[in-house]
Image 1 (cartoon, helix red, strand yellow):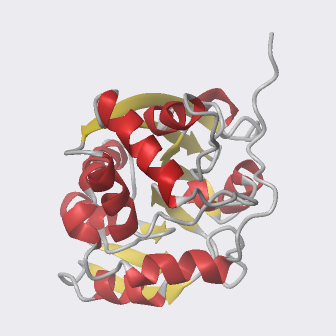
Image 2 (cartoon, one colour):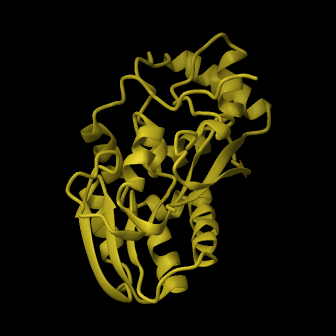
Image 3 (cartoon, rainbow, N blue to C red):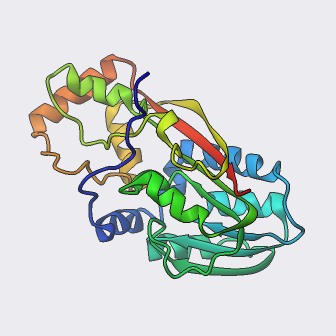
Length: 264
């Protein structure tokens, strides 16, 4: 049996770089977050189907503009909300949305190192944010430490086959893409042996007008921080990759892994 692929990403870009790119995209994120919106709705329904107290204490990591936040508010009702993101601009957009039922606080937090949070949560959740962590599994373990007994950690993140079409277009030309590498689904949360639950994976295939539209969508959601050590393509190389990508159908796959774990 092969060992699960590690979830550690050496040389994570500085958190300020990631925050800046997402902050710059805050005002036009929603218009380009096609898959992100669908995943947030799916995740919110999974959470709503779990048992919970009447007024749960909820922590969201990486709220972005509030897609999951609002979907949860519609399904959970009154709660004690702590909504966080690394980008003040994203957080401001989320906070400007409809008021959350119950009490709410919005905080700038590095979800990989949430040292300033008090814990005792019934639910810690995140939609398509934790893939930016340096060491995903160590970070998930830290997040479980913020749960009450009987509380749930529920996340959606990206797995290995994500953007395989874009990588294939590069490889056909002997080039290396800037997109980060993602772990296999079965490696995600593999260290959470003291938790009950697990993961399942679902592919979302999005049809783009062309390769430029694919890149434009990534830029407008702030997801353009390159893999550590990546050497940018020349203009000529990029044109070749775009042509290859278009020839193969101009689709992009998001291999979304949903993880649900309960603290015994």
